Length: 143
Image (cartoon, rainbow, N blue to C red; front, side, top):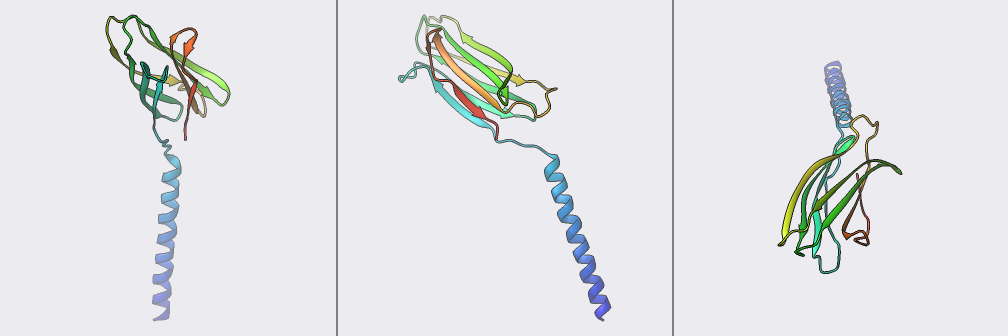
């Protein structure tokens, strides 16, 4: 009777080890990062803004949202820079040219280098209404 109980316990222990090891293996094989939401204004009144989501991948990130310009006749530019550590890897610019009325312009693109081991880990965003009138530089960090 004791040998039957020992065998049952040994089998249960072995199954538990396999289940735990299998769970750890599959968990470490997939890489998921939390998405980030942001909203940045060019001024305190938020007459021009950019908002959206960053969906982080392993080596690149998808950036999607809206650029809002509430000032007719003014240009709105958004500068995007992607970094791996302190090295700039990629950049892009979104802009709304001199509209006659308030405008909401959607954007949706990828930043990064799909061949870069480790990928990007930070995106810097800045919105400007002229070369000298810009928001502070905003950094979103992959976590």
